[in-house]
Amino acid sequence: MLSTTQRSKGSGQRAADPRRPHHPVVGLTLSFETMELSADAGLTMAAYTAEPGSTSEEALNLLAIWAATQDQSEATDVTGRA
Image 1 (cartoon, one colour):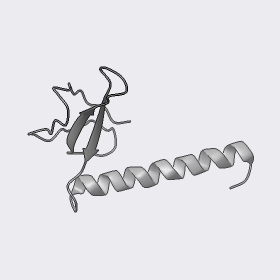
Image 2: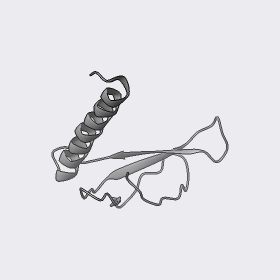
Image 3: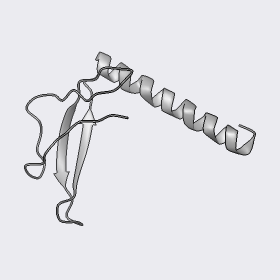
Image 4: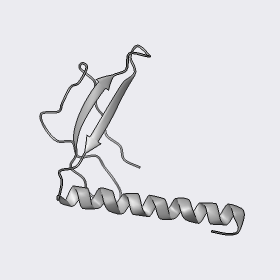
């Protein structure tokens, strides 16, 4: 699980400085953008991205593979087959 704190200051805000979310296995430096959603007052969506070719991008790819492997393993445990 990734965790970071971020306050939205307006629609389409782009961070001037990268954020360093904490992850117990890999270190990450991510840029982010926030967007207020018009469907719900006060609801904000944040998109985090890693610099292409960076170690943070490699770490995110590793986490994606790891998560997919865990999801596949859980499905096998429930059904008894892959």
